[in-house]
Amino acid sequence: MLITPMPGSSREALRSALINVHETIVNLRGGGGPDALSRALAYLDWCHEAQRRLRNQVRPAELDYLVPPKSYEVVLSAAGSFGFGPSGERLINGLVSTQLDERVSVLQAALDDLTEQVKRFERHAELLVLDTNVYMEHPEKIEAWDLAGDLYLGFEDVHIIVPLVVVDELDKGKRQGTEKGYRAGYSVAYIDRITNEQGGVIRPKDFSVEEKARGTVTVEVLLDPPGHVRLPINDDEIVDRAVAVQALAGRPVRLVTYDTKMAMRGRHVGLRVHRLEQPEKEKEEEKQPRRRRGREAKGGDRDAEVEQIRDPAVRAARAGELINVRQQSIGHLSRIRREAMEEMVADGLNHSQIADQTGLARQRVGQLLAAPPADKTLAAEGQPAPE
Image 1 (cartoon, rainbow, N blue to C red):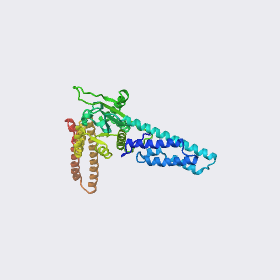
Image 2: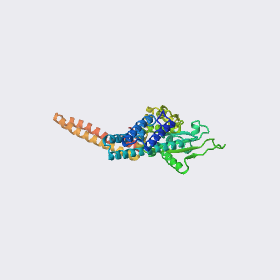
Image 3: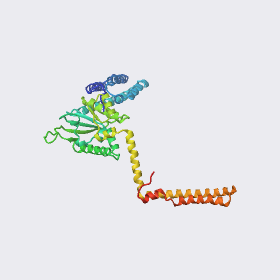
Image 4: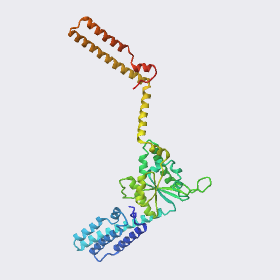
């Protein structure tokens, strides 16, 4: 597990504390007391002191890794449960020796990792952590970025640190069938190729008169250390990894983002933050009122419907539907006429009166039969039927 200073601590203070507890337990392993009980009590005392020295230097999970509570409990339980005859002495001595060897090994590895990470970020370059949206929304592809110009860094070298959670977000985002999805996939492939084939150098230093005078631009992926547990919110995880790098580097790390909330997160934990302006196209879309965009969407639906009505097949189908409705209506009228005649007979009307009423009904039905469907007439003229 990579041990990093807590916010408010420093790499020097952490290194000093680790060296102190490491030297103490090395000395304890070489001696510790004349008998098994004395060695066990000395180990338990070391656990108390190590916890006190490291509590304000590392996070709780890292502290439990360096000085695990279970180790303390095992030795304490053994010291209180076994007798101190020859067999008991041998058992407790073996248990204490095992714990001492493990603690010495873990602390030495933590010191080595800390020294390696400190050297890793001891470079004369501006350290940048870019939010995922920068890779997906920046107007230029990654190899064409002029970050030194965007961030007013002049001729400074630029080193881009890519937390693994950003790589995961880009890999997930590349599945979108959009321009952002394409840029996400392109960025992942480019970072993988440039780190494997060119040592992470995106652009070498160039002070020629033909190009803008800029320093070297490099990139590296910051892998999750063994045992690392990510935070549930990806934005928090990105900020947390940037803070860890800042503590190890001993100098500011700059967070670059398009997102206001992400910028607020970064400032809250002491990062330098640069919020980029959105590309012009997206800014115009954001300025457009929601209601207006909704009307435009509905207008687009109406246009599509008009285009559909102009299709001859659609017009023919609609004309057929109208004819069927008209025929059903005429059948209904005929039934009404028969029922009306039966009622007139029942009312005692004479044949002359019934004939007059029947003639009027036939005349109306004939007018309905002779009238062409409105949609059919319009279709013959090449015009869409009204809604």
